[in-house]
Figure 1 (cartoon, one colour):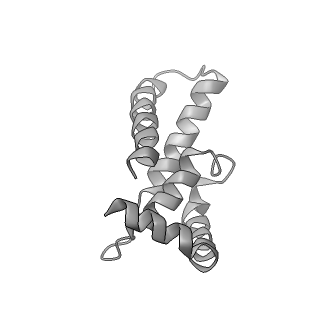
Figure 2: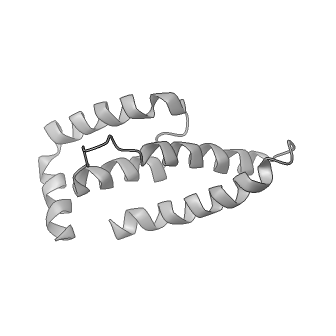
Length: 106
């Protein structure tokens, strides 16, 4: 989790910093637009339903997808749908990997 979340922590910090300044200007270069776009998606990815916490291994899987850029072309409104489908796939096809993540976390 630390390896995957470390990247996310840095990206979200950069996103928040740039987002504050982006409110005042409209001339943003491509790299800044990409940073803002990914920040929105990563923030959306962190949302969980009330009283339905996600298992640590599932959190690692979806955060990994986010920080590796697999969500960059996805509309933010479709993140939750993607997350559900992605987790269904990972749970059904990659139990060994999830078990390893769970074991290494403990």
